Length: 280
Image (cartoon, rainbow, N blue to C red; front, side, top):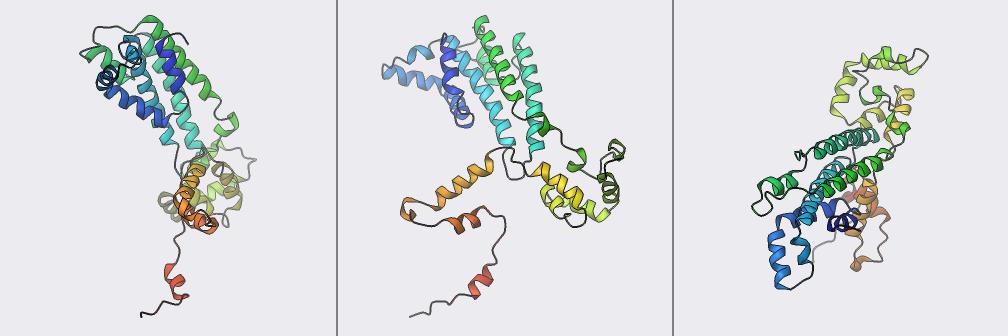
C-alpha cells in the first residue's frame, strides 16, 4: 500500500456498519486521540500529523456513513427484493454523481471532508492533494462496479402490478396474459383497495390465495426471496439471547419458534390447561 490513506482504506473496507460509526467517532475525537498517542509516545501519532491521512479519514467516515444508511434501509422483516433493488439502483446513480462532483472539488456529499477542508481551524487552507482526490474517485468507481452485480437482471424485473394492482396501467400488460383478467377484476374491488392500504404487501397477497390464486402465486414468487441476510442474523441474535452459558443444554427449538414468530400466543388458553401451584 502506498499512502497512509490506502492503508486505512484497506483496513476499513471489511465491515460497513461498525466501522462506519468508529470512523465518525474517530474524526470527532481526533484531537483527543492525538494527545493520547503523544502522551503514550505511540508511533501511530505520525498518521494523525499527516494532512493526507486526516483528509482520507474524513472521506472514509463520509462514504461509510452513506453506505450505512443504504444498509439500514434494506434491512427489516418487511423489505422485499424489489425495495432493495430500487435502493441499490439509486445508490449506483448517486455514486457516479458523487464522483463527478468530487472530481471538480465539490464536496457537498462529503460533509466531514468539507468541514475539514473549509471550516476546520487546523486543516483549513490545506487543499486536497491531486493524488488523494484521484484515489477517492477510483474508490467510488470500485464501489459502483461492486454494487452493479449485487442483483441479477432477473431480480430487477418485477411486474409493477405486484407492488400496487390498483394503480397499474392494465394496457401495459399483454392481452395473452391470463392474469390481466384477474387484475381488472381486482382493481374494481373497493374493499380490497382498503385492505391493500392497511396491510403489508405480503399480507395482502397471502389473503388473496383463494380469491385470486393465479395472481397470488406470481406475486409471492417475487416477494418470498430474501433481499438480505437480515432474517438470518436476527435469528442468530435471538438464539444468543435465549441460549446462554447457564442454559447451554436447553433445546431451543420451540423457544426460537416463539421468538421469531409474529404470532402472539393465546396465553390465557395455555394457563387454563395448567395446574396452578397452591399456596402453603
